[in-house]
Every structure is written in structure tokens, then in C-alpha cells.
Length: 330
Image (cartoon, rainbow, N blue to C red; front, side, top):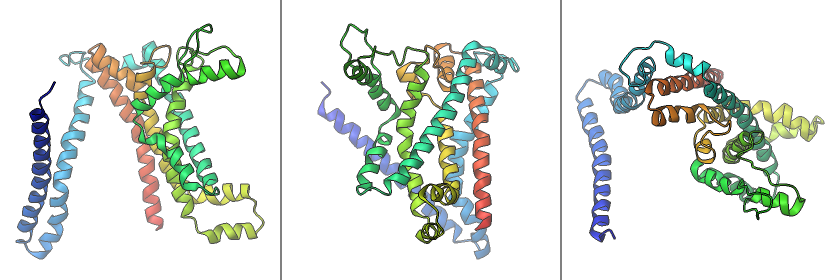
């Protein structure tokens, strides 16, 4: 049994670290501001923004930019990061059968997760605004987002649990199939015809609440006068939805879709916990993990990481361009 003094020491160390960390940052900015005030007014206006942004830019450079550049460098080296191998690692990513399966599954995640998460989120956001207990309904749908991806995967492992037909089923889905419908149990995670869709369903369950909340806020920001004017002109609910609501929140839909697309490209937790990429469920992030920690091949793992980065960049660029266009209109 761990002595109480050990816990107290750990708590005191944590509090001291918070105090020193936060206090040190505050002191740093106070001292820098005092030094800036010694300069002429024009110089203060030019230098102050950079002084306040400086620590943040340094942290971003040290923890994001440098590791990214180093990963690109490692992707051209062998598995031990000792010998230059050119494009061999990238050739592996497009010729290896397991990698082709990973690319196929990531594309499946990209299409299905984005379509169903954003689509269901939009539908629920519209319908929830019309129910009496809107807050309760939205809270229930949003609740899965409060669960970690690993925790949600463990929950769904029990939902998908499979036993032979002659054994009592403990999985919710198979128990329902056997008890209520009299059907045979299905190996949701071991059957190649269903396992990828079962994994994506967990992602949809987690992401729909996020999409609903953001899109619901966008719908509520639409002036009621516009909706009333459309009704006066004879538009029905379906026409109002497609010709008024969707066009007016299109920018929000694009932002939400971008977030879900990025989550689809870096899908890892659900696959790792439920199948570990076995039986045709491999995805790029899980394959990268295996190459680095199972096979100790840092070159191939880095190449996969670079490919994931390159796949995300166009999505982010399109989102930034759309944001700049909106700012220009305003």
C-alpha cells in the first residue's frame, strides 16, 4: 500500500508545478510589457504584438513545426534512420497489400463518417428545434462526445459481442437478433462484410452530437423574418430547409464537414481497440503505429505520417480560403 505521505508529496509537487508554470508565464509577460513601455510609442505599437505572440510561436515551432520537418526527413531514411533510401518508403506505401487495404478503409471512413455524421447532425438540429424538450434531447445526443474514443470503443465492444448460436448472447445487438427476431448471431467485428461499417458506426455515434450542436447554433442564428417571408411566399417545410436553411448555413456545414474529414483521416482509437486492424479493418494511422512500435521501422512510419499530413493540408487550405472569402464579403 502506498503511504499517504507519497500522495501528499505528489499533490504538492503538482500544485507547485502549476504555480511556477502559470506564475512564470504571467511574470514573463509583465516584465516584457514593462520593457516595451520604455520604447517610443510608435515602436511599442510595432513590437508589442510580436512580443506577446513570441512565446506561443516558439512553442508551436518547437512542438509542431520541428517535429513535422524531422518526420519528413526520417521518411527518406531506412528503418533505423541511418541510411538514405530515397523514395523506397513511399513506394512501400503504395505497393504493400496491407497499405492498399488501409487506403481503401480510410476512403470508406472519409465518405461514410462525414456523410452520416454531418447529415444526421443537420437533420437532428432541425428537428430538435421543434420539440418541446429540446435541451434534454440535444443533451442526450451530445452525451457520447463527452466519452473518450477509447471508452466508447470499449462500450461498443460489448454491444458487438458475439458468441456461437448455441451459447447465450451477451452483446446487445446479437441478443436482440436472437431473442426478438429469432435470427442467427452475427460476428460484427470478425465478419469482413460488416466489421468496417461497425467501426464507422461508432465514429458516427461519437461525432453526430458535435455536428448537431454546431449546426443547431447556426440554424438559430438565421433571422426569423427570412423564414416567415419564405412561408408567406408559399414555401413548405421541405423547400425552406433546402432553399433557405441549408444555403444560409453552408459555411458552417463546410467547417463541420472539415472537422469530421480530419477525424476520419486520422481514425485510430476505435480501430485499435475493437479490431487492431485485423480482418481487413486496417487504417493508415493504425498501420503507422504498427510500423513504428511493432516492426520498429521508423522510415515507413514516418512516410505514412507524411501522407496523412499531405491528405489533410488540402482540406485545411480549402477551409481557410472559404473563411477568407467570407471575411472579404463582410
